[in-house]
Length: 106
Image 1 (cartoon, rainbow, N blue to C red):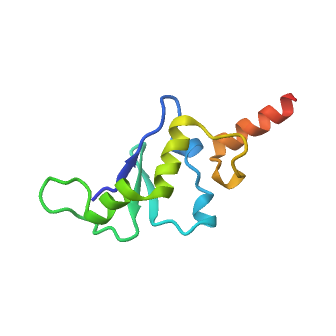
Image 2 (image 1 turned 180 degrees about the vertical axis):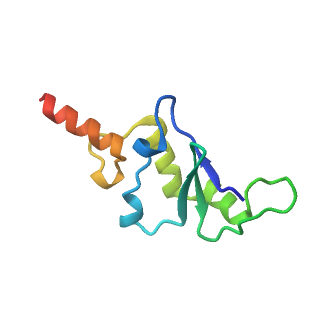
């Protein structure tokens, strides 16, 4: 099981777009990793393998991918951007940099 992939908009990547700080503040049900410029989240209950060629995810990772509200919210923010009044812990590094630049322009 490779875990559930997280995709980023064109021109963006995991280093600037994923909110790593959330892992220090919230008890999240997954760990993250990057391999060959691809970014994945893997359930803390991952079975590390799947039987046969389908499904590609083990059951815990598939359930995480399909049902976890926190992961859904992160994907929404990655795809659609972050609302200005969102608490800073939800901002990825790239979002914080943009926020600082806007503040300097004022």
